[in-house]
Length: 569
Image 1 (cartoon, rainbow, N blue to C red):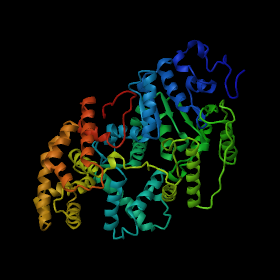
Image 2 (image 1 turned 45 degrees about the vertical axis):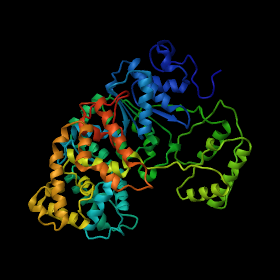
Image 3 (image 1 turned 135 degrees about the horizontal axis):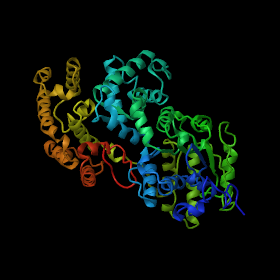
Image 4 (image 1 turned 90 degrees about the horizontal axis):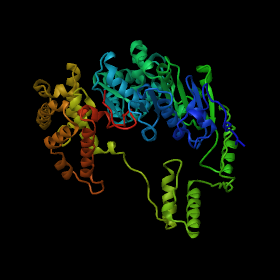
């Protein structure tokens, strides 16, 4: 007897022979009925409503492999998009374990857009393919300068707050004349900084994370020929976590799937929690309206939880007003009953956590087999205090991402300057590392001179006339830095390791680290060596990529294939 939600074994899912007869057993083996339906669906739009723990990643990766192996679709005609590097990496690994998918684009929205822009951003005025990608730190540093230059107090109008506001407006895809200020920031400040920010980014040949998506959308809308080239290439477009897409991502998918009409999306409105960063749940709720004739497949069998957990979750979820009905079920039996403990405040809650841990240890559990998750950072203090008072050993799992470490960002700034001398934010970071006596006042003076001359800080620094406006030790420091940049400039076309080693040698960077050593910091020299290992590995895997290619992978993995790095082109 077929279980709930499972198609009967003999059901024909699309025209032609029975799936079980024509399929390679390894691609459909272990799938339930709805998963098979999602995998073997042919052309036309497809909505996969995947409940939590229902095996959606398995369905998506098998669908990619099925398209290549059973339908004969070339791998390079497949585009699969997800939201995080980790999810994209897992998807690539799973597909590679099933079939040779070299040529398929499998990655995040941002990685996909970065790759498109490396090829075609030259169609947009003022940009070249060597653009720099600014992270949040770079963006806030630029905004701080713009706020001060506009005559506002950067302590009152914090760069992070202004930057978040700009990002929100971009994610909503509001045009500048449609922007409405909110949250206490003054209208004239926002409008002026928004315009200044766009001009400065263009002058720096730089894009922020939001720009990566917006510039592709701008490219597609301004140059239909470029858009159509990609739309014709990708015969099948797949999007995971579709409930988290925003307006820009929605429009990009419509463009890319506009020629063949084969858009398959997977998601769950009940798991949409990112409205605060622009996600629009209507994208998945309205999918059948936006793409008429779409097939809807519901993945309702849960492989992680017992039925009691699923029933409790669904009892809460059913109160949501905007959703698509699903009935999650499990073969794992009812399981233990849920326990709800009501606490007065975070301290009371933390004490309860400590008590539960001690009770589990008394019954034979090990400390290192337990984990405590807290919903907000402020809970950390209360939990740590309760654990210490109960003599419970613990470890805080946290840290700084590798490419966000100070010494790594310093070195990357030098490498960015080599390939993109117009990158003013990289200049500001590198100019005084190691210290050259160039203080904030001197840097502001050079910036003003560069602005008057209509050139980058790097070019102004190399001009004796521009340096003559700077007094004291800073002038000599800038002259030395200018000479350093001239010596490093020819390295733009060499391998990543050669360029990095040249920077290390020219700047005596390791000696600088030794002089500025902080006993409370991790081994910074080991981090530099790890960066060298990364550069060496990149050069060996993709020797044609060079320094430019290495920099394009230092923020996130932009690798679009399932098995190995690809050309930065």
